[in-house]
Amino acid sequence: MNYKRIFSAATLNRGYIILIITAAICYILTININNGKIITLYSSSGQAQQTNPAETPGRPVPVVEPAPVKQGNVNPSVNAVTEAAVKMGVLSCVSRINQVAGFLTANNKSGVFIFKPQNPPDQHLFSTSFELIRNDDSTLYASASFFPNKDAVYDTVEYVNKSCEEVEKTVFANLKRVSVMKKNIIVLDGGTIKVFLMPAGSGTIVIKKEVVQ
Image 1 (cartoon, rainbow, N blue to C red):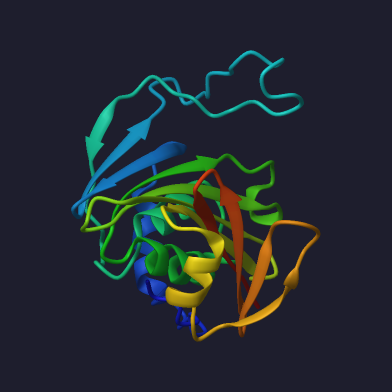
Image 2: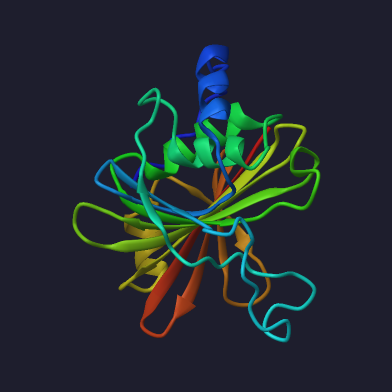
């Protein structure tokens, strides 16, 4: 497991951004990424279908009738989530999105659900949820949210079939225990990254969190 801090993002080439914006023809709502092949799902009507409001109080979930379209990156260094953000009008924090999304999906098969931002999209939270599949076929959940001021926060969540004490002494032997939050959740200090170990049956839910500023 790589717990190295992500470094500050390089500014994206302005020409690439212009090309991506030009290519945008309708709202993108969710992307599936599989071995570098990108399938983009568009709403054929341009409108998001809504689920039962009782299931998602106060906020419709963006669900669409899929119309698969193959899409290639203008530049391989531009993450597909970055392309989606630009197409939705999220521009102010696009370099941070590319940095964090690229970090999370590197060397993983991945799928992402994008929460449609409120209007105007460039002035509101841009939030994503990922399913990441490692080479050993293990699965973890990750979420990343981005703010117009370019700050971001991401979490990864996975299950390890060992007790919290075992995980702490083996996987995270080099991290310092900060405390127990209240009763069961152990907090470990990895510098800018914090690791939370939560018991789940005979195993442990491992949560890694970093605030990127």
